Image (tube, rainbow, N blue to C red; front, top):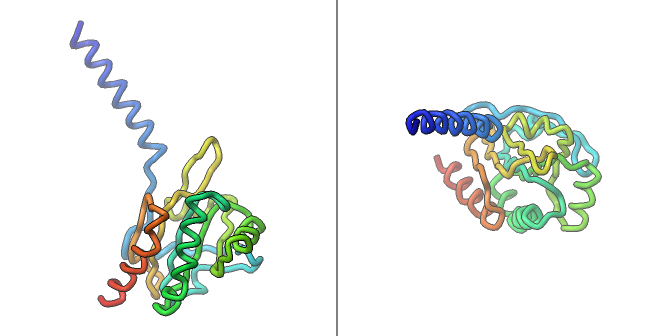
Length: 179
């Protein structure tokens, strides 16, 4: 009886683990592979594609939602360090599922001078394995991709901590540019 009960419990735990893993596991593009291209609308209403930035380093960061505390902190830190990124030949692009209008308002309120990309259908976020379900709504997960001037993924950051992230990306960018 005890063996039967234990066996049933193990089967149940295994099934539960597989079900949870199927919804949480996403595959981000691997380091060294071509970064998936996209064409989206920005907060200023223009259309941009990743190809527009060939020849530059790109910090492509995904974040859940405009006007939230962690996302605001992360964006302000990228803004604080924007001159350092520009000196390194890098551009910063933020991506969330918010609308272009929301991005425009967020940039105006927070004084952001880099492009925020509207991904309302989560297509780009999905391409980069950076989606999450939050209370039944699809949002971008907090991941970042450092893309080299040839358009290849140079570094992947998952589960980013907003407070220290920009400084870490700058440090890694400097190291990658040396090699």
